Length: 247
Length: 389
View 1: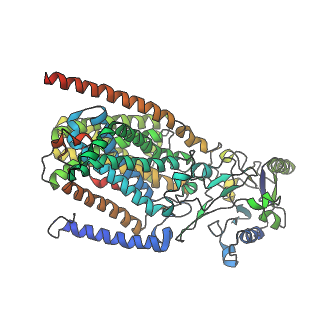
View 2 (view 1 turned 45 degrees about the vertical axis):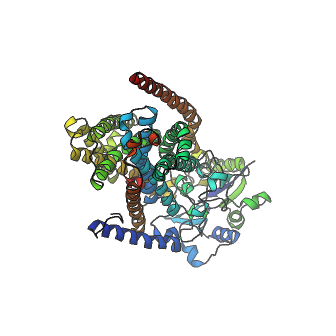
View 3 (view 1 turned 120 degrees about the horizontal axis):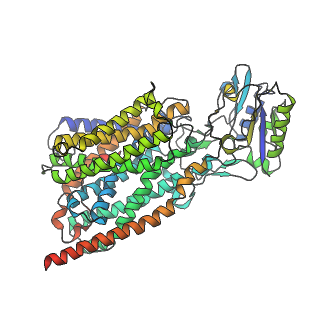
């Protein structure tokens, strides 16, 4: 059973308590200056953005079929059964393909370090293992961030949409995006107006490259036979020509 | 521009300047990390070290596997004289790609990780293995030139014995590697501009790498004939040019079909940067293709050279478009390489030229056909190290 986060932009009051709790959980510094930074980065793994009169909290979507995990050459990123996509910095070689591949542009890099790591939210993976909700959920004073079983979160989101047909833009962001995520958004206005990327494919991304990668064994086996065969024929021909020439 | 030249020429001065800038950029890279030496950002994680150094470097080395296939697998012996330089170019190209990767990877000390940490679902994993294996194959294909130079006959025989499987392996690895560089970008359907994003990106990368490899063979022959005062093998190059014209025609036709089937031909005529860059790329491909079908063009060294340069530039434009400019709008950001990124790239290219020159002077690269009887089995083409990127 996988967990998910439901973030309701209409309830969010922009207090940034989630940001502070997140920084604490990661052991990252957090002060007024960092609080004022309006976007996620390598030292701020969740950020409350302001879009006009609406708030929008960015964090890793922890996709159901994460592009980042599929593209990582060394398997440093893994999707866990509880929902989080976790990162093993000890494996990472810094190719940054995960950053290129992420349709939500979530992973950040420690650009200024000599031994850099990628950084991103992992939905408090170790807290979930202990049966606890994410730090941001616990910190939210108004319930704008809810945490629970994924299906239950979807049901809750649907209930809210049905309960207030005029109060919500009648869609849930994260159900279909990139084949489904572990973070859902509700909003009063269309999602692009709260800074979310909306051109994201509605199917899982790993399929796009796997379609080609799965052909590799076929290409290698067919290619060996074909090239070997051609060589055999042309070489034989040259040999025969050589012998006849000598005669 | 190599150190062999006795007097201080303009080229040597430029060469020294480039290397000095590259050395300082290297210091910045080591001391201040990627942030201090590049204009990369969280929104734009790959720059010209990937878009040019790696993607162009690999494909400009494609002359190696193309000529190996022509000479050894299809047994078309007449192209043997240009095989060794092509293999040397490819080998240097790959070595310099690895150098480029050492700059670009956040943790170059972990370059070996894909050897023991596997993720077969990752294109980058395939790319990593192809780089490692094909560099090894190219090294083995290059070794006969070293063995001949020092008259080591026994190892020559050993290499000779495994040469056929080795070359088949090389062609296969190249096929996988060239196409996989295109596959890399299949994961970003919403970021890469629709002019370039297509499910057949791997096929297009493969076809264009063959064209670029052939063009590089002509390019490099032309330069080395001047540098070493050799006669240009014009009939051979004209033959290569004929193949190049056909490959380019197929490539352009497939690209047209692709655009048409995806219903994006209208984008060609829009007034936006992407469309202009695309038109430039395609224009640089169409002109030499048409010209190369004229035998008068193929038989004139200057015209032949100009056509090969256009093909190479069209190709570089394509890789930079797919790898950088085509991604800017979709990533919601702009990227202009920092001077240090350019300096490192130029240094790598310049070093490639110099090393090629050095090896060509001291090893039997161009006289391979003189050893017909024994060692020459392996390879002899000529391409310039330019491939290096």
